[in-house]
Image (cartoon, rainbow, N blue to C red):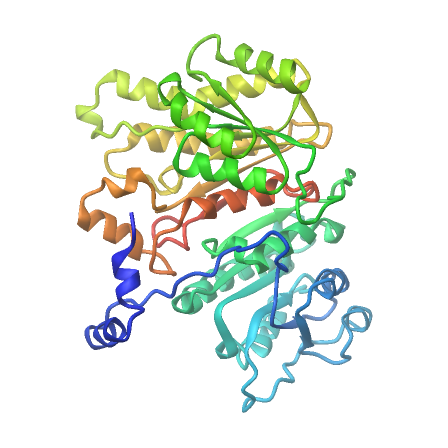
Length: 468
């Protein structure tokens, strides 16, 4: 369903009316347009606190883009800055008209809370120089790995700072996110830096992603189609978010097995025909489903590289009025089926080395939602499942989750007008997301170079005001 308000406030009359009435004026988001599009274009300002550990890697990553790099601390080169460990002091003149597509700050060297002043020194004179649809990305250390309480405090402080920045710049269609690195994980952050600085992350803001050090190293041989040669299973692929996931993974080079219930086979076949994939009619709650899926994958492809658990249902009722089959069905589809399918694929060694499992949770599973005790329970269980499995999987296999907020689908189009409008506006970007926003985040997880991205739950919600 089209967001008519978004269109209206971006007309001259609409802008004037919104300003007069004090209404939100959301900016249309720039999303990924073409396969060969650079991940970042325009001017990028980079800074670092004393002893930044990621600055040299940032220089390599950003240097591969067509963006024009500026550095906010002396000496000017990123590598020299890393060696010198110089304190970051903004050198951009306050009266310059220079606008930036991204502000990137390496705070990984901070050892105590006094060093948090470097954030102010870098962002105070530059935050107002962000262009529309810009990006703020901060790199820090995972507080769980810090050696002192003071260091842990300074690194954890980055989370609150990032979320607050996201709320300040969201009115421009801009986002702010944070990467927490494990010791020695600097070489594993490239896919994440590229994702969070690119239009692919248009509806992801105020999020923290943890990057771990990995002994596995896989290089995407085709940067335009990094999933070339991969086989992906996408459940619930006949429409909405699932359809967009299938299309996005196919765009990135994967061969997609689209799965949905037999009643949706006609729509599913249209999707898989369009992306040159294969359709599988299957009720994932049936006792035979895990073996049926495994047999199909083995027969046609000999295995699977990517498993995307997207299929989901809502059966809303307040708890006192909820019939038991509503409860049982929500848990079975949204949670239990995922566990059983993974268990079967893993037991038969059908999930290949460096494979990816991605689950779709929901902000309802984080914050709860009225009339959705069954759905919230299941989606919160998905988060627990991902966090536990991340510690158990071997052979370079990773598992992560996305937690969508308000996404423009047939389901949200059926909501009452007032609830639908509240869902759209109650986030830092003041608008609903699109199915492709969820799909792009899943594409990041699935990238062969995302070997250090494991056990994360990233919200695709425009930094919703609901939940943390």
